[in-house]
Length: 306
Length: 129
Image (tube, rainbow over the protein chains, first blue to last red):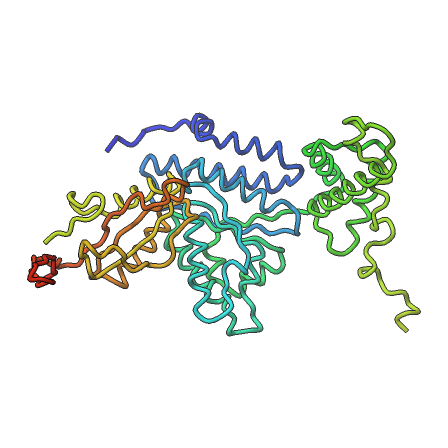
């Protein structure tokens, strides 16, 4: 046994553990999400201090690291979970640092005796890493007392308590429904130490996200297209099923489709790289969002309702 | 009589930590891990009962250790072995196999003689408890 260290240099520890790198990556790759970054930085500081305390023999217990991420769809919960897994791995709180993403379907079976093996299979896979349960509230269905979700919840709770060294569970979903879920399952509330709330992106942030998504795929917007995109974001936000960054990604995918179609039908002669990667205003303007959204989502006109 | 089959069987029994590190080695080489148990350790009995499916997609030894604990709970008096299967083309075989659980009293084997065609004699091993 080596002697416990008498002093600790937190700054050196911070650099050596590679946490700085993860936080830098977090800052650079994620646009917006100020409060989330702040919370993660705080959590990282806590874990770093805790690790130093354990090295000195001041604390012995593994802190509870299970977390809940709440926020609307497309606000970056999965992306942050991935970084969190990296962070916990660098700090030595999980051995392997991989992320296993599951939803109710992966945990809950269809008939009696099917749920426990399924849940255990997933837990086995997630050991040494982070288990990310998306839309965790679907596990619990209050209107059906014989729902098999309850069985999965019990196994999860047991593992969250007994295998704290082996596994970190992150539960994610809409804020209000997660609150209901925790209210109905007090066991989870007491086992989850960190609640992180993901705010919606502002229009400006979404535009920056659009730009960086396109840059990642070697596409670009011209000035008019960018103005159209800004308008698109403002309109899209008020329409149903708005999912922040995911809506933007889908919009860009469709814009790329229209761009390809336009090039195919209009182009005469050879095209250069710039033409192949430029998205113009009509590619974006053609979206149904500018005409009030999908037909099914449009409010029914008054005379038709009568 | 101590049964010696597979790796490490001339060494003292591995403790859980050692088993877990062997499993880490297996996972590090991308081999599939499986657990098998048997109440008949006869050397000719190559096919043991499978405990669940082989595990192809684990990252950490803890998953295997959980299964091992459950198998031990269900079959405390059985032989349990961990096997590592390499699915690389050209190998496609068990690369490693070692016993991780033994019954409290192990059987002895004694040699028996048997009459065969044309007054010839055959010899074989028979377990005696």
